[in-house]
Image (cartoon, one colour):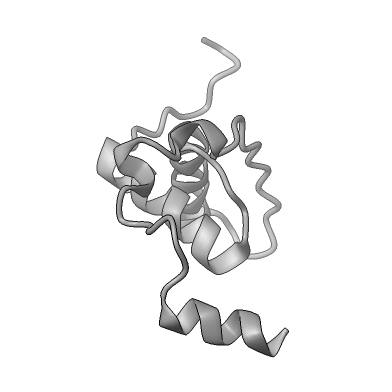
Length: 89
């Protein structure tokens, strides 16, 4: 325990929201545990001195979560807005 400075607990809903935000905002497709890791890093960053480097390793990918509640609100087919974006590329 001498190696542990702090334990940050993240709730499941926050972990899931962080995972979704990573996918939507950064294009990083990860699962729930990675969402929790990222959320914990953000919590640590709130109290860290300016200029601090924080490493957060995202331990999983999102593929296995496609059929779970994590991505239940994502349609299998593109909507009109997504089709318009794809047409521009």
